[in-house]
Image 1 (cartoon, rainbow, N blue to C red):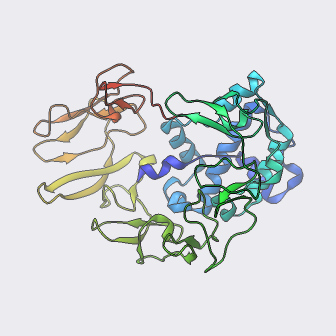
Image 2 (tube, helix red, strand yellow; image 1 turned 135 degrees about the horizontal axis):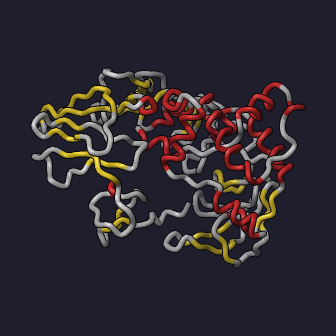
Image 3 (cartoon, rainbow, N blue to C red; image 1 turned 180 degrees about the vertical axis):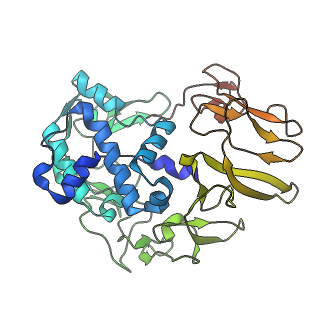
Amino acid sequence: MLKRFAIIGGILVSSLLVAGCDDDDDAPATIPVTELEDTYLDFMCQKMISCNTEGFGEMLGTVANCRTFIEMEGDDMFGKTVDAINAGDILYDAEAAATCLNAMEAGSCQDMAADRQYDVCQAVFMGTVADGGACEIDEECVSGACEVDYETCMGTCATVVAAGGACEAWETHCAKGTTCYDGTCQAYTAPLGSGDSCDPEAENDWCDWDFYCNYDSSTCMARGAAGAACDGDDECEHGLDCNYADGENGVCTEVEVLDAGDECEPEGSSMCNYFDGYACQITVIDPQNEEFEGTCQPMVQLGDTCWEAEAMTMTACDIFEDIYCDMSAGYLEDAVCVAKKAAGAECEESNECLSDYCDWESNTCAEDMMCK
């Protein structure tokens, strides 16, 4: 379930959220570049919680919890942008940033889901690197598109396709303010309704909030209520997820945060309250038939036992600390939580490394080559 949090990205401080909703006169006129990341992250955390997108509202609960998880994931969403601004490769308009974020705050949950590109937001970052020049991120480029080589994390500013031009989803760089939808670079302006034709290959879903784009029919269909059959989370009402408890058939299931002692499943729709220090402790009942039972129990710390061989019970090491359960002696021996390894150390699994990346060719901890 934690994997679902990896998509979290952000926008706006709580004071700006309140001002944007109740009193536009109190909204800040500018957002200094030094405050940009905190402002952006706080806003999106608040938006995702209030919209309860895919159950994130239930799971995260507070902006503070959302920020804690982002920091744990190590997402550096603005580091390169700020560096490029300071280097003069990006011109930053602090006033446009405030106007943009106020517009995004006033937008609907569907606007967020569709990644609506507001006109007022196009002037926030102005790139100075011409087509063909070296870049790392889109914002450095005059065109707004950096074609990145994901082996080196360096790229070249690319030519974009103008609004109305033909495109291919996930492949074509469309002009600023537009995205590739249904084979054309175009701007999202309003949600699609029930039965409307939609593009299931697009990066974002343009169907209205209570609908999704069905892959087979390419039309907007109503999201399923609790108990409905599903093939993915987007087919379920917001606040539900598609749970494959029996391993074969998906069912829309309510997302819940469980308390200490509650029964839990390692891959279920609900989760123990990680932010209060609990995780699903799993006991193996029948290894051959992969039968387990679990309850929410306190996470254990450095040096604590995380695997009890005789009882066949696994307790999670604290996910907010740089530790992991060392199972190198095998399942017939007890295991304890140990410190994660630095770059260059031998590893077998990525969870052993501080970088969360084990290079399987060299079996050593290395920097993750996924460009951030």
